[in-house]
Length: 255
Image 1 (spheres, rainbow, N blue to C red):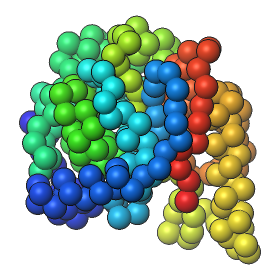
Image 2 (spheres, rainbow, N blue to C red; image 1 turned 180 degrees about the vertical axis):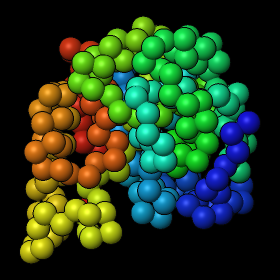
Image 3 (cartoon, one colour; image 1 turned 90 degrees about the vertical axis):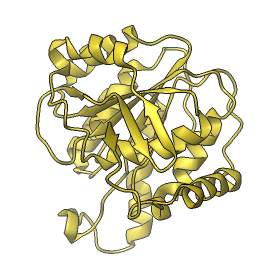
């Protein structure tokens, strides 16, 4: 059992309070009308008071859909390793209850060379946990496949994407966990000091444009050239390599 490390700090630790907060965020969200099936989404993982509105806007799109497994990919904030780490947990627990881990898919991936990261990499990882209460609310009967991304080269990205697509079916989606630019001396990233809000918006807009164009090469080049501190850049690059050719992207919220 992977027990919560964030309940009571990053989000409410009492069941009814947390449930009501997420329901309110979902009701208040106003995502665009998305036609057709959803292959996946990108949503943030900061404290719920900061990024909960954006996460709710993404996850509201999943309500009522016939989805049985969510592949949740988050960046590693605490350990360095090559490839991806498959969770060793049987279930994730939050104040809302337990969410099963898809053991069959986890076992399949854990046997592959690029999925040999430490199986405990997810235990302290907020990049995964912050998504679970939203998933428990909008997809209460769904299984979870939690993956932590370490260092993945461009060539490895394509291989990993191929392996992940191999375990998917039409009732599986991908959820990518990523905050966007971390600006300030605390993060060692001060590329500009004037018109900060406008410049951050321009920087993020270029990142978003690469994503909406489904161009992993352009996205990786933009991150490398600007040094933009998108913590989930590797999960995003993996996701872009997975997208079907006929898919279309949409920005559902930004603030």
